[in-house]
Amino acid sequence: MEAATTKQHAHPNTVFCCLYGYYNLGYSRQELVDVYNKTVIATGNWMKVYEDTGTFQRSKTSSDKKFTAAQRQWL
Image 1 (tube, rainbow, N blue to C red):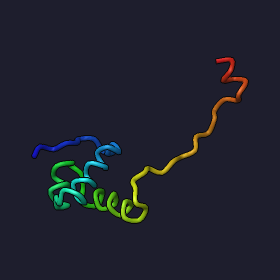
Image 2 (cartoon, rainbow, N blue to C red):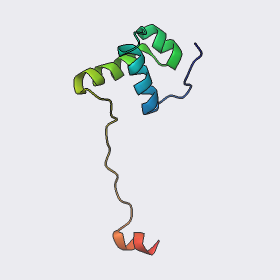
Image 3 (cartoon, rainbow, N blue to C red):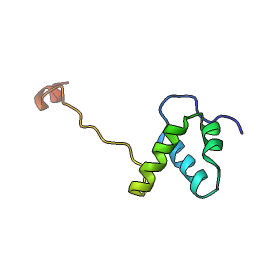
């Protein structure tokens, strides 16, 4: 198989495909590491989150509003 990703952060769809390949299709972790061009640690973290929570979601961060509501209205 050819490498599927080249960027540092994996898109959630990439993570879902990797998890599907591991749990449903029976690919080994090393095969998935090679295909998705990620480290064993990264894929292991995805699997740990999935096993702990039953899903994969990135943590949400709260954004600080730089402008007040009136300033946003004006913009």
